[in-house]
Length: 584
Image 1 (cartoon, rainbow, N blue to C red):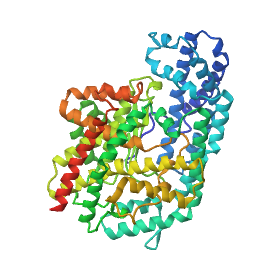
Image 2 (cartoon, one colour; image 1 turned 45 degrees about the vertical axis):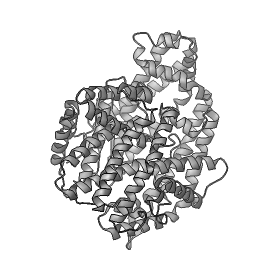
Image 3 (tube, rainbow, N blue to C red; image 1 turned 60 degrees about the vertical axis):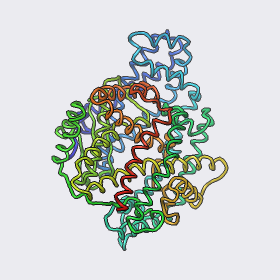
């Protein structure tokens, strides 16, 4: 009960359709290699049409088999059959690096590409095809791409696996009991202040056992990224991140400028929370997530369903119907259990125009907002599913838009319906705590990663040095809002976002998404029902437009610092309300 149904893909790994699709995948990969060999001799239009069709077929097939294996493994990390099958898929697709580079170079050289993508049967793929030309300046030689793809498996990818293995097996000694790192970190949300404090010290004490190994992994990953950027011709890892995000530096600069202007507001919130919890000066890290007020309402699955349907039905019938379908047709794996991964995620299934959502539902209001968040991703999946599969991928900055928008809908409704002052305080504190994370925490992580890349060119940073850089970044972000002697020097170790060779600066997109969604919500409140269709058109466009052009669909100029200030001003108003409540 409460588990998702994956039969829309396959009945199991022994399903003949799975074996058939794996064989088809091998065939498409072989076709890809053959097309690369003859590409230069084909008429331009013929090559583009063959390339598009083959890419659609290949992506459709690889997404089906890979998604199935990933979802099975997420629900049961002891499912070695799925892990092995996923390994076979990765090995197969890694062989695409060389022919893909070869094909992309041929297409990028077409002088008539812009004319060809205007033809009726190619126009829907114009963004995809023109990006091949745009991306070509960063391509290596065919052989070099193949070597890089294979070496990455034992390079950054392996170092990332080491980080995951070490952080998932290290144990913290909490009050004489050995518990996992996720378990001790979750105690930061406990109602008991002594539990939070003891858990903080227990967490910090567990890191020295693995810190130098993890530091070695981080140094190795960042050096590989720097080397790749140099080889490919990117100005810096940040420049590569922005390019991959299809986002202008001017947009990031406007976002960061607005955040820096409003950091004092968040410090005011943290100091007010510190006073309310009995601390002098800044807030100690172990009380950063301390709950306040009283929120006793709990939900079962049916209650969560009714609550969300009531809220979303007032916004849009399509969102309402999708959420209803997700609950009633086993799209959601609800409950925690042994060997199931923690946290929550959404996974779109392009072949079925459906999604699957994993949560660890515990009946709390937080669990309901998590469901709303992940079902926002599902709604985004639905909007882009109207495009071809090769027009469905969207960049990290816009990836959190629909999910955060759903959260805002739920939080605003909950605040308006608060039954008493204690419930209102609990909801307000929860929202500000989350906002502080996407602003202050993300800003500190952004500054830390920039500092790591800067120093890695000159030095190997041991664990002590990395902790110093982390504390420097936290002081920049939180200022006097936190107790300087009780910060978190090991945030570099416990956050997996730093440990990717292909996705650097996995931080600013969260600030972007949080503030972008709040800005869109403000437009919805101002414009009413007509905004809903504009919002859906914008979500659909995320797969076929750069970030700035996509936002213009909704009438937003992302390079204007005033847009970001407006979103932050709304949070600042709630900070003032919070300070007023706790000071009374």
